[in-house]
Length: 240
Image (cartoon, rainbow, N blue to C red):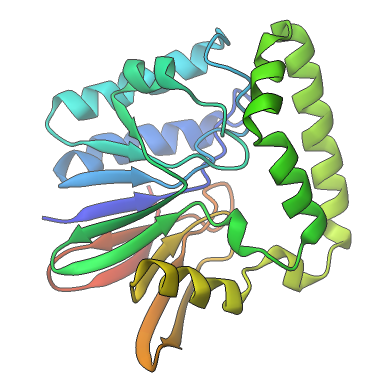
């Protein structure tokens, strides 16, 4: 048996092919896993658990079915869906995890996270993140009418997509210094994350010990799945 990790599906009503791929994955692959971990950006946007978009109910039912079959599902918030709350978690059967979490599985300690905090070179984004993820900001945002929240989220996605092509490549990938520091902080030599949309297996040294960072791909582009079992940690493409 294996534990599966995915990230950056960016599900939305406009990309139904990706939704179909995810549902097939749950039925054909995840159903046989020991557990499933979703490392953020399951959805392209999330403006509150009170959003009645039918796609969200469809995904919640599919994940709940997986959980009822005996496969636990865990979720770390991404930068697109950090407002997912207890209502959706309950409906989907997902267990919400802190933004950095260490797993002890198959004799290994593995640090899992979404990955946006590792992109330290993009200081403008990190400043923006600290503002929008502040508890006061999120509480105020969720008090706004749903239609206004939707307009704000649409504008934020527009400006983000417009700015990204002009950012230096180093801004879009992780800082190795930040990766090493995170591993040192948690006392681990394995890391799995998403966010960058740059699937990778990076070998590095942490305290003179060989370490490994594995980055997941974005499903609308170079999607990937990381499979961990007692024998190995491997990254496989999500051809479904």
